[in-house]
Image 1 (cartoon, one colour):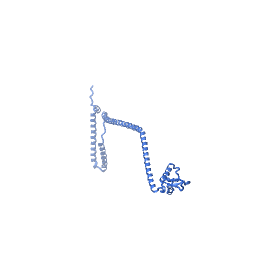
Image 2 (cartoon, rainbow, N blue to C red):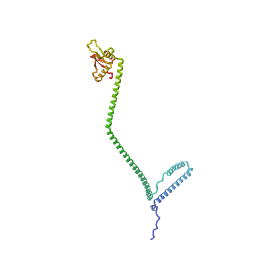
Image 3 (cartoon, helix red, strand yellow):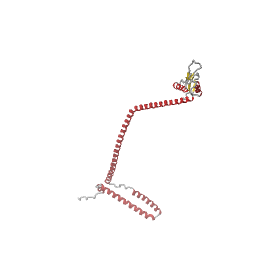
Image 4 (tube, rainbow, N blue to C red):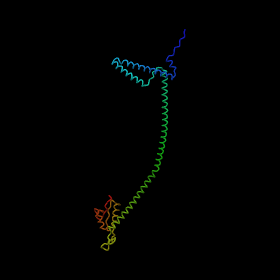
Length: 273
């Protein structure tokens, strides 16, 4: 019996033994062949359109429309990337492996960048936490110092307040002395005591002793002190030491007022109210 003749390997058997580089070359060759067939078809269509232009106007319009449609399809096929049209599973497997390797490399680069960014963020977070702890310690220290110095500050404020009040009182006393001195000089110059008996007036009867009259400044001081010490009872009893012209002067100019029920009592007008 004759031995069978070894048949030539099929296309699938040849591609199964190809390496990835040969598979890519075979795929490119197939694409180039298909592209050449498309160009030949386009050329034939163009020639066919030129030959039928002379037959009739109807056919001319129809062919022009077909030519435009084919031109648009040709441009779209020319501009877009050609898709994998091989049906060989080995070729598709190798191409898939290559694409997956590219994707893997891209993902590894992204992972490396993300890890580096996370590391930098962790370092920044650590620095921020350290800064926060330092600020918190400083705040606690300042609060402790504030609590320790608060009594001293309060005592200083009290001492300073008392010192200021004491200075104001001294200033007021000095100002009061100056006012009283100026008032005394004014009254001595313009409202002196009668000159016939000095500071005393003798009565008609020799048996009665002489009465020492008070100066107008003394009368005013008595009225002022009475008004300030007992404002609820500011009236002063008029005695013989009050010279009547002085009393009349104070009453006429509204500086003093008589008691509404007792004419022998008078008080100073409350100008400070």
